[in-house]
Length: 116
Image 1 (tube, one colour):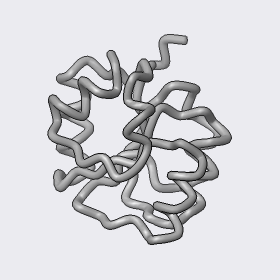
Image 2 (cartoon, helix red, strand yellow):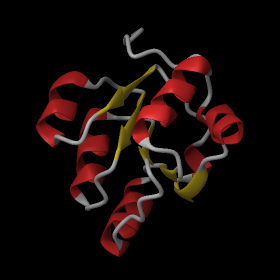
Image 3 (cartoon, one colour):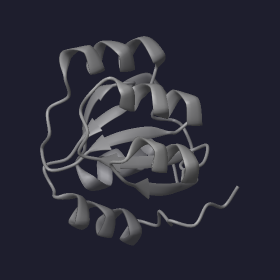
Image 4 (spheres, one colour):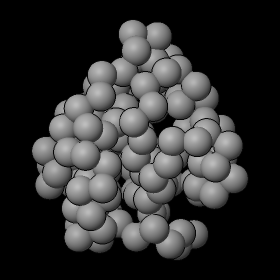
């Protein structure tokens, strides 16, 4: 599924990376512990987190993730927005709590099992 379809289906707010929404999403990962995301996410995954600091962009870039979704209406730090924009990482927002957001992602066809 294309990232742009998830943005539309779930009503996600696009903060950065609007020119990268053509990417194919390979699966999803949810977590707030950066080392866990580094160890277990895969290229093309969409990452759901409540972390808002710039290090999330470094992790997404390192792992070649399709996008970061900030759950629960979290506002990204200004430095995070700047870094995500520079790196071309789609940074998305949802007002939904992480649990509900992940359920809706699953219903939309995003699996937690990596299909690479």
